[in-house]
Length: 584
Image (cartoon, rainbow, N blue to C red; front, side, top):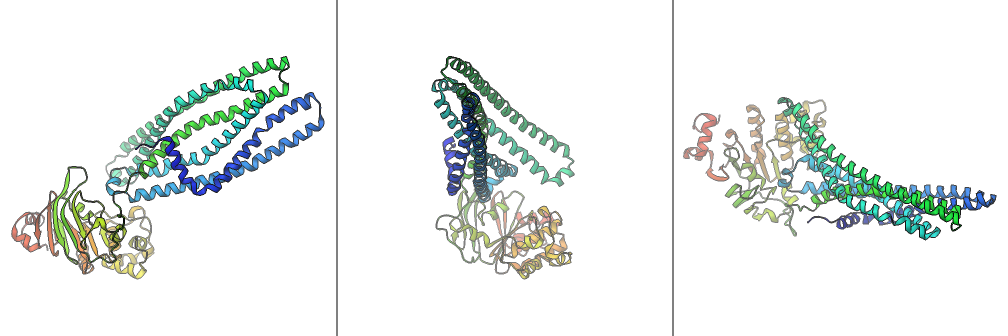
């Protein structure tokens, strides 16, 4: 459901509620600073009537000192309001940004993969920054200028209520102009934020794929895309600027017209003796000073509408429930045995387009199962259901006899080690990457995991050893080295279930053989699920499942499947040129 303006304000207020005392002190400073700023035009009346006309020197001295003290007090309270509101605003923004980041992290992979990463980053950065402007600056201006406006209005009514009513008879015209343009400004604000998000998305995609861009010589094409998107963002910004400029100018014309008319009426009253010269000057002074708060309040309309547009985009994500989460009263598995069972599992990323169809199989604790088959058969998708990256639309996935949807999600995932086909390393040291997600791992445990992955000797040969930086996404290492570090990262957690998704695909035959020997020891006592296209990596599996078009078409050991001369035998023959049962 779309948030109304009132609901957006209330939700933002809820984030500010924990800092109520500071807000109260800030508002008090705002009010006092505003009131100190309202008095000087009234002192101007006394200067004209009592000093210039009445020639009272003592009054002149008092008024001169009073003006200095007023502005000194205003400066002190202005400092207090600015500091306190900035503190509160930055804390509120910090809370929202952290909450948004945490929520995005916990969203399902299907949601994340359906978005461009740059657009999600834009919600965390650009949208939150726009909201920050409203929480810190706009709120201050709204209160200060609002109190200033009301204070000056009180003085105007006191000086001459009839002239005040005449002056403010024109204000509804300005209000009508503001109301008519505010809705369009909010729409433009939405468009500006969307276009800015797309700019970030295009830049993020290109910069994270520079190897592809360079290899295909598409720098000019990427520049063209980036330039066109920036042009779209520029056009949206200029539409907003046009509307704001018209609004600002129209309101100023209305206010100046009111001021000129009052000057004409007030001058007639002074001539007739109904007003003193000082009262007219003070009245005109207040009207002149009121132009500033009214203009600022008018400009706030644009900033508020843009901030509300950004707020809607932020709450749009926060209101999106995490599809994959631990249920209330979730079962916390202390130590998994590693039994896995699929019961009539059907899965589709998009409704009706089944990737898995009626999957049934059982894995005993400590058993090694291999998944093979043509590309796109559903092997990786099947393995993703075990750590519950996705939930099946039909059927159940059970671990140790419990539906994974009933298990405490972090406890389940901590006991599953995963080595993806395309390993991603984080910026930091080799030790940091191997021990990622396992803070209790000491140096001995890191080295043991590295030995299993066949990478220890390489690491210690480096000048900085395990403290060597891997660079952004591991760019300072080769593909095989990144893969072996990913294997070590999975093993260091001592998982009960090990999922290897093409874990040796980036390695040459000699290193692959060494790692297979090491992994054989690492797999003992653990349930292992090996996904492979290179069939030489699965011949030692206890059982091999052949997936074709989302169905298990064959199941058995390497030798058994070769004797059947079915789908597996044909795959084997394609890779090794015959069906002699050897992968050597």
